[in-house]
Amino acid sequence: MNDLERLCEKVSDFAGYVIDRLSMSRTEEADALDIGLRWGPGKPDVTLSFRDVYYFTIGRIPGPGAEPLDRVAVQVLQPQDQPWPDGLSMDLVRSASLPTLIWVRAEGPVQLSVVAAVATVFVEVS
Image 1 (cartoon, rainbow, N blue to C red):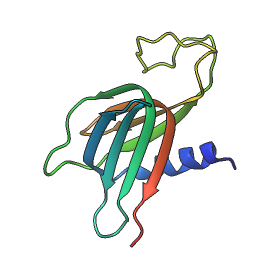
Image 2: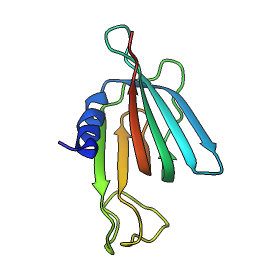
Image 3: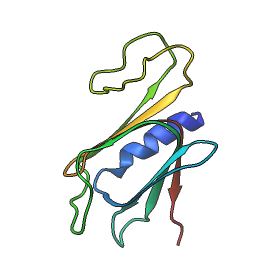
Image 4: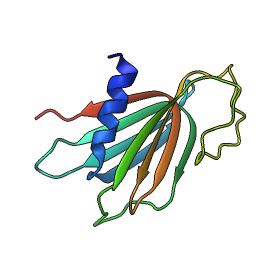
């Protein structure tokens, strides 16, 4: 199993987590987005860290007493001259010249969608 497959497998395990933190920044090198997830005392906190962000949307900003995410899905988008998958409405034209991208979307009370070239999962170690 390669790193991308492991990442995809791991991200789909985050249903039931609450979005605890969102941090977006722009540096000279790339756009960056960090999403902090919290379960509670039973599981470690997690940060999904994205670099080279091509697309980000959120349906509702998480707040105090946020409800858990119902589903977290991930899809690898290979470079190709085809339309974007259903459900992804990016202004950017998809082409074979783009890098491999990862599309992460969360469903539930807070809905979000991120497309990025680099994604990393950080799990809190106690």
